[in-house]
Length: 348
Ligand code: GYE
Image (cartoon, rainbow, N blue to C red; front, side):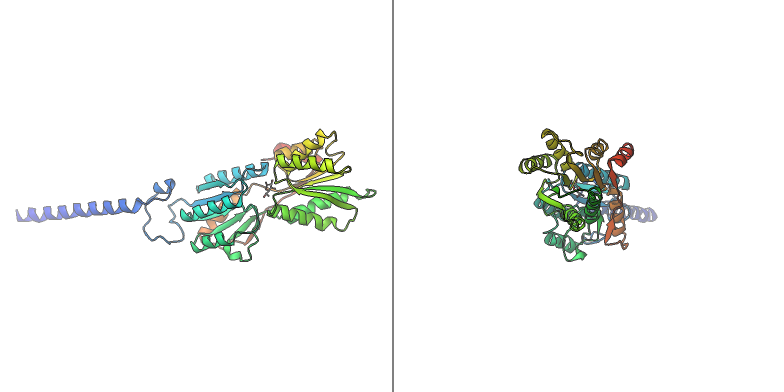
């Protein structure tokens, strides 16, 4: 009897321990910040400020996108979404509709949600120091993709993955210098600029000017923003055509604005690519199509498929690996003939 009594006491104690342990586990999992994390097993350490997530937890990436202004952007968004899924990364995605204030709000909400990494494509170059400092203070690493910021303090972000926009502008200028080398008299150029204050608009203009400045007959007679959209490109080109009798060349900072401008040129009874030579940047499907039809004479490629490189960088940063401060995308350029050849195998 005595022996039995001791045994049953042990059994009751053991049962109590199991129950207490189970309750403890339940409490640890309850404050779950996101749906995908709730499914993951509870973290061993309940401390709020630990940096890297445990290996068995999904990485949460907050991405603040510029908007959906162009074919380039659509391809870029698709690349980011697909490569996050392929890498098993939980992507929180927001679209800022080309407004910096919306992007800042999205970044602040990612900080509040304690995501593991924040990535974004800054709509304009200036005005990011405060929010980047907030992310840094919260211990959340930031990665820039596509567009740069002008912050002096480069410790505010881990890397910048994207194109060399100045080089793209130079390529556009070099093609024009070559194409007009036998021209008699002035060559009148109109420029459709990208979003005012954005890195690609600033740099594509700078690279282009740097090359044409040694050729005084190459004259930019008008330059205005078309905000990287087709509608604005068309509208501004219409105004250029009304204001200027002789336009020889259009330099558009992206394909979409060139495509809008082509509509305006055709509506004015002129032949795009012949009466007005057209140079643009990006190399998206519709731009390449127009180039293969001879309506765009030269396209400088800007690769939007940044997703895989971004996901690698996210993983490396969280694994504590050193990554370069600048990762430049590889790109080329296409004449009309080259565009015709490349079109069938393009991914975007
Ligand atoms: O060229 C344009 C888009 O930032 C490189 O943004 C990107 C630019 C791209 O709207 O089409």
